[in-house]
Image (cartoon, rainbow, N blue to C red):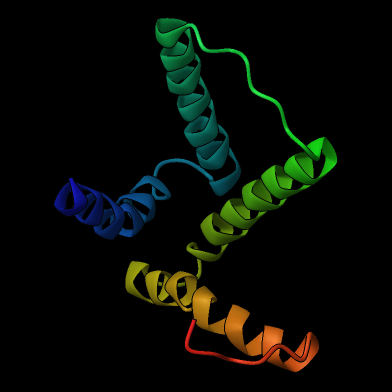
Length: 112
């Protein structure tokens, strides 16, 4: 299963770059999230599992919108760069979060 996830993740940047040759970034992001929403709704209907609660509903909405905007920025940016550079920049986010948490929040690195 991990291998399948790796292949899908690794090829997604190339697939996005190819898709952007045919559709603009805004439409592409909309179609991607529409398809994902339809699949999730279908899975929820099959499982009949609609009972979930958010402890902090506003935080969940904010994070969902921020994630959608991040995808939009990624797709718009891919019009100006290659798939490999986009992949590198997206995957460097973990390092940037660590560095910014140290600089801004004064967090300390530990062994975990």
